[in-house]
Structures are given as structure tokens and as C-alpha cells.
Length: 142
Image (cartoon, rainbow, N blue to C red; front, side, top):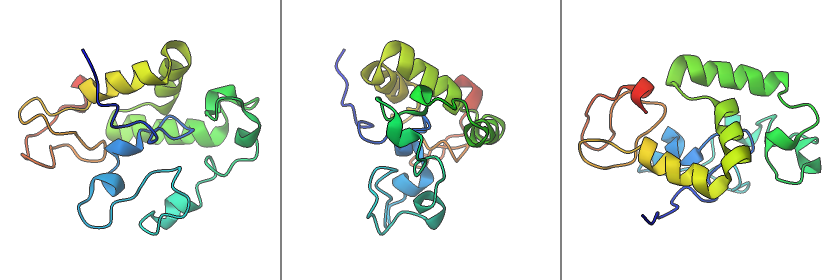
């Protein structure tokens, strides 16, 4: 099975798949993701992200937090807890998957995992319904 790798370049150092973010998926002025530093559509909260701008991250070979000497830091643990609680996704679990299986394998898995079972559209981690067909999603099933 081949994959489009549509999320390539959208996986943040913290393990967030920016391709699932409402900021990236919005029709008007979509955000280009964490790596598009000069993106005028990037929300201020993302521009000032302490994880993306972390000096320790710059020292890692992979560019991902799992290679950091402070991993998992308090900021990452707090982000992970918020996303597990509110959105059914774990940054730390994502990072472990990337480290163990590689980025391409992680992305292939993401494309399957975050796909609407009804219309086939990509899902948004921040919503409990498909943005295209409005079908309710069970995040635990993702």
C-alpha cells in the first residue's frame, strides 16, 4: 500500500501532527505548521511555542524532543496531558512511535488513523466531528 505522506513536514518536534490541527485545516488562512516560521497565518501561541523555540531542541540530532537531554521536560508533559485529556492524542506516545518505527511509518499510521470512516476526509484533532461530512468521531477509536 502506498501513502501520500501528506503529513511530511508537518510533524512538530513535540510529536504533534500539525496536519491535524484546526489552524492548518481551516479554509481561510491555513497555518503551514510549526516549521513555517515566517507563516503569517500561524497563531501567536504557535509562534511563541516554548518547545519549538527550545535551545535544547537545537542540540538534538533528530530535531525531535525524544533526543533531548531533558526529555520529557515539564512543558512536553503538560502539553501531552492536555492533549490526552482534551483530544485523545499523546505527544509522548507519538514521539515513541517516531523513535521506534521511524517518521515515515508514523506518518503512514497517522493517515490511516485520522481518516473519516464515512467520507475519507482527514480529521481534525481539535474537533469531535469530521469537518467535511460532520460525522461524530470517537477519538478513542482513532
